Every structure is written in structure tokens, then in C-alpha cells.
Amino acid sequence: MTQGEAITILKTGANVFLTGEPGSGKTHTINTFVEWLRNSGIEPSVTAATGIAATHVGGMTLHSWSGIGISESLSKADVDRIASKEHIARRIQKAKVLIIEEISMLSASTFEMADSICREVRRTEKPFGGLTVILVGDFFQLPPVSRDREVKFAYSSPVWRDLSLLTCYLTEQYRQVDSEFLSVLSAIRSGNVEELHYEELLRRHRDPVELPPGAPKLFSHNADVDRINNTELAKLKSASRKFSMSSKGKDAMVEGLKRGCLSPEILELKEGAAVMFTKNSPQGKFVNGTLGIVVGWGADSMPIVETKDGIKISTEPMEWQLEEQGKVKASISQIPLRLAYAMTVHKSQGMSMDAAIMDLSKAFEYGQGYVALSRVRRLSGVFLTGLNARALEVHPEILEKDKDFRAASDAARDAFAEMPAAEPIGMQKKFIKAMGGAWFEAENDKKRSSREARGKPATGLPGRLAETLSAARDGKSLADVAKTRALAVSTIVKHLEELSEIGKLVRTDFAHLLPDVGATDEIHEALTTTGREPLSPVFHALGGRYSFETIRLVRLARN
Image (cartoon, rainbow, N blue to C red; front, side):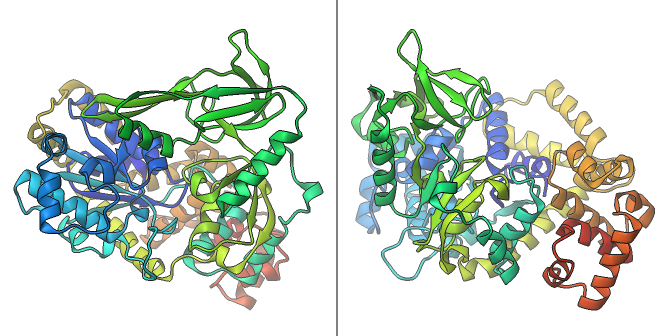
């Protein structure tokens, strides 16, 4: 499903589970939806499973929002007590749309506790008291922290079933553009890691003297992170400067913001220190994860950072806010930097990096290695100092559940694709009215006309496939088509395969994208000798001379 298709569904007011691989645009999609709600006069309640995720979205943890705090279970008396707190009751009564980020890290029990509070406050047995609920996350990433041996994901709760969620599984890739790297990540995600993929990663193993200066190191344990950061900063001979965080609001809320903020309460820097930005610049100068070196101090004594692209940025304090119903309840202010010598895999979740040094020799949790690797845009940016087998494992339960999520997403996409264009618009209007918002007719009609022109051509195809087919016919090469669509090459090939499956692709549509005759014949022969599935033996038989996408394209031409 494309981002546009997911946004159309979100705007109808359905309860939605928004998921997809790292880099597929979940955050962008939910931010677009939130902006639309606010423009319509509807203020969503934005929450997250962890403090770090909460700071990324400008909200609070679900634990704080619902009043359950650190409780692991609630009796009926506990529910009554929490629901009777005036500020909790007011917050939940005023809420209309509840968004929960990083749902993969929320246990079933916590999910159910928040649900029970909402039902009690809103005096209805509808799930979450009848709120529109949007769940965002990827269950292949880090699972809930549990004292029990058995991990119970949120989807295992009856509440998940009762919400009647529509699943929107984003399938396009915006972070990784390296086809070989994508094949490794896909193998980990599908539980099909072969010797070929393991060898591909081991080729990225580096000795300490070969590691790039300034690249962050990712570890599975906090002790390693603290040791590296302190040691590296101490090596610099320049004078140290410290920057203290300031805060506003109630102590409990401020403490929650501090725990989730990637910038430390006391930021100690020296000229020459390797740093990472911890927030997105409103002007687009940097993003959460941009790397650089402190090269000096401005007239205001603030750090000047030179990025890896040679751009010098004069920094200034930025705010992390905790909002409720559109009002800022607490805020902290700090320079959006942290030392970039090392950080935990957990704190890297949600970041995009050009390069990272990873010690995955002590990986102990399902998904840890997958999260670390998927932070980086291309395989050439991965520098491994250690790797164990657990780092390449994902939770076995998720492998099966993921098939259900994908099938449910396909069903939702197809159902909306078959609707007359006016029907989703009508659903959106009803949703806005029910939430007490305002529908801006001219603006939304304009967007609808534009979307119809782009996404529903005479072919009757879903927008994403129609646009790829058009680009494929016009493009001179596979890379050219991918650039036109601003998608990964692997996504383009996947679209062509889908078009072929539904009988909407002929060889002349993409024959010009195939490799030269000699290469095509060689791949043909390997496919005939080795077999069409899986492709790893074919890739290996060809000595890695052709990418998986090129092999898939030749295979497609044989259909």
C-alpha cells in the first residue's frame, strides 16, 4: 500500500493499524494525517509506547496519558481510582482520535489497561471508550519489555480484535536505495537468512583501525555506550563547554520529557567532538540522525557543527514539548545534539543514518540486529565489529502474523480502489462532522481532483501501479524509473511483478529495462539450471555479477 492510499483510509475515521518496513514512511504518513486533522479543527491525542518515541511525535507516553503509570495490572478499584482523577478524566473525555506510536513495544496487558481506563471514563463498553484509534508500528522491531519469559504483543489482546482495525501496510521504500542491502534486510525480515546474506554482512566487518571517524557506534547495552562516549570525549585536548537543559511545566511531565529526549540534561562538548543532531530542523537544515563535528563556537557561544557534507550549522536550543488538546503542558529546551561516538540500538529506533559502526556480538533480543542495520541507508555505510546469530533473528511468532497483516492490507487497499471516487470523500466528510471539525470544501475538492488525475487514470489500476507502469514505459533504465518515482529499485520491480500477476503488463512495457542480450541469456540459463525460486542460488551461481532486481526482471520477461 502506498502512503497516499493509507492516508485516504485514515481520513475516513476508521480504526487503523499503520505498519510497514523501516523507511517505508510510517512517520511521514501519520504526520500528514495529524496535520489534516488539525487543519480541520480536530486535535488528536498523540501518544507512544516509550518516552523516546513520545518525544519524536511531540506527545506523551500512553502510560502517562491514560494515568496507568508503571502499573503492571489494575484491579477494579484501581480503574475507578484512576478514572476519578480530574485531569485524567478531562483529558480522556475531550479526546477524539487517539494515536499510539511504536505499538510493537506495548505489551498486551498495558494495551488492555489503557483500554479499561478509557471505557470507565467515557462510560461505554466500546473499545477505548469509542475513540477513533490509530496504532502505528512494526512488530519486527523491538518487542515489549517483559519480566515474563513469554512476550505478549498488543495484537494478542481481545481489544485489538474488538477495534476492527483496518491494516495499512506501507510497501514502498524511502530510506534504503541499495538493492543488495535491501535483499539482506528482506531476508532477515522474512526469516530466510542464508549463507549468502551472512557472508554479505561479514564483508562489512572491519578492524578498529579501518573504522570511519565520526560514525556513531551502536551497542546493545548501555554500559558500552557510556564507556565509549566518555573515553572519546576525554581524548580531545580542547576546552570543555557544558550546556544545561531548561524546562517548564509540572515536574512529572518534565521528567517524562527528559527521559525520552536523546539530548542529555547536561551536554558536554569540545571542539572536535563527533555529534549527532537529535531533532528535525523546521528549516530542513538537519534531521534526527544527521552527523557532524563541532568545529567552533558562535558569537553566542553556541556550537558550530560541520556536517559530513561540509555544511556548517550554527546551533541554538530547541524545544521538546508535551502537548495535550493543542496546548503545551510541559517543555524542555536544549541544544539538539548528543555525542555520536556511541548509542544503544534502542535509542537509535526511528533514526536514519548515512553510516554506523555496530557491535552486534552481544545482541540478546529479537529484532535488535534488524533495527540497527535498518537505520542505515546503504550497505556501504554499515561497519561491523561483531555479529552473533541472534542479531539476525526476528521473533518467530511475527513471521506468521505478518502474513495476516499483509493480506488484511491488500484487502483494504482493494476495497477502497473499487469504490467510486466520491465514496471515500463522503466518509471523510462524515468523520470530520462527527468529530466536530470543519470540512474545507474547496481545498479538499482541489486535492481530490489532483489525486484522481494522478492516481486513477483510465487504466483502472491503483495509483501506485499506474504511475510505475507509466514511468517504466518512459524510463530509459531501471534506475531512471526508480528516480522518477522516488522509490527504491526493488519497489519498482515489485510493482512490475504485481502488474504481471494481474495481467496488466506485457513484455514491450519493460523490455528496454532488461540488461544486454549477453547478460539476459546468462541469467536465463542460470534460472533454467538452478530454478526460479529461491533466487539466492541463482545469484550465487552468477557470482554476484547481477543484482537480485536484474535477475527478477529477466525472470519476469520469461513469464
